[in-house]
Image (cartoon, rainbow, N blue to C red; front, side, top):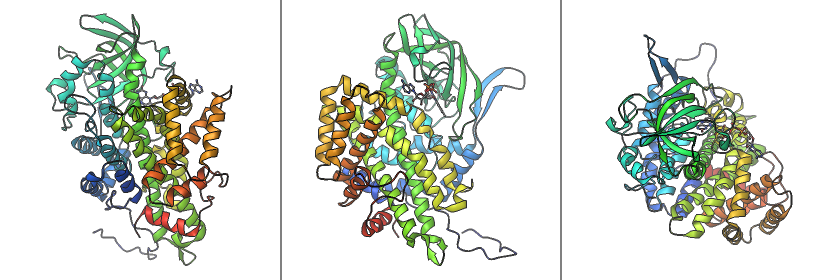
Length: 550
Ligand SMILES: Cc1cc2nc3c(=O)[nH]c(=O)nc-3n(C[C@H](O)[C@H](O)[C@H](O)COP(=O)(O)OP(=O)(O)OC[C@H]3O[C@@H](n4cnc5c(N)ncnc54)[C@H](O)[C@@H]3O)c2cc1C
């Protein structure tokens, strides 16, 4: 119980209590429906225990600390020797231990490094989505570690040596060679000063020596620099190549990674993002020389999925805070949640939060089924950039609107909204920015034309009967057939995302929710800001009640 001293000059009342000590699973009807619809109903009890732990006041306070005391680079020690280490607040290490202990970096892989059986992706995504509601920075190394195994599949012998340490559920932050540690984490370095999207412009060089390569050059962004090894791209004699660069050389010496600075970032502050130079840094090749992009893309597909899951989680927490506040705050003698304009605004926001979690978990089911079902594989290929585009782009404006529901308190750092707001844009920028997602969708449609058409037809069938579905399909076809389709790719991608979301709601949410979403988002009515959707009173009530039980 919190004991508060009385204010001298006035009584404090009509403030909403903190939204803490909640079960993040049990209070989220949309999440529960999506988990059930995508084959993970058996996880409900474990997810509820997870939701209680992550919804606690202690976790919320730790998240505040991890972000208020950001990491610091220690380039040299007191005697001038290079150290190149990063110091984090203990709260950050606590989050790493929690997430790795839960297997969020590993649970989608078997002990042999193959994709784990269904519903591994959906079950992990439900947890990842809850973690994103609390602390985002530490999720960067967690997602990179799990995704790196996608790329390491190109080099099975190397992967098998590292696997026991990667899959270990012990977080070991000590600065030692990976083989001496209880567990290891992995990062990724692709982006250079002259080009991030255009990695073929990389100038970092890889020179073959013995059973490895020596790397010279730099990376302009390399997050989570205290990882134990990094997948990097560099120019080898045979072209752009993927390599794995450990922090310590095989002889136990510290490897040649020289961290120049940590980025001073808008958000994601608990996570360190470095600028780094490589000086004769040792690395192993992963995949063939010249096949760097196709090799690392197997990692990037998974990190893109995680960006979408995480943004859906950010949206969920922002909305839950808004509804919680509106239920407690009285303005003009009436609770905010009973005021007509606020009700429509909250319900309109809830439509997108419902859609985000539904479409994201449906996509995770495609990853679960991809190994044995070509249709699910095609769906995962086409819809990952589509879903990343829409969910990650929706989140920043969505959080801002939810923030406004809390009035001035929403804008102040002590609440969760300010941090969520600063956190939201990065998921759209990294792992391929918005336009790059548009190009990737066009690439999938060109290269896997037949499979992609089948995905479109399946979405149309699943959403059949909902308002605006026929028109949306026709508009997508028109855009894709136009000679200037690259210029209009965003329009096709956005429509595809809305169609996929309507289909996911049609097959997973209770009746009426998909209909309301399709009417508001596929139909001609509704404005460009939230609170303008054509929603009837009974649907408004239902949507708000689904956000949080009264
Ligand atoms: C906090 C943070 C952490 C990061 N951590 C890492 C990391 O750990 N490892 C790593 O490798 N990178 C990391 N990045 C880098 C990130 O992945 C890149 O910033 C991103 O891929 C964009 O590359 P760029 O910055 O070079 O921008 P550019 O490639 O210059 O792109 C600028 C803009 O142009 C658009 N664009 C590009 N090509 C086209 C085109 N053909 N048509 C139309 N528009 C186009 C892009 O969508 C983008 O909006 C991080 C970035 C941030 C912000």
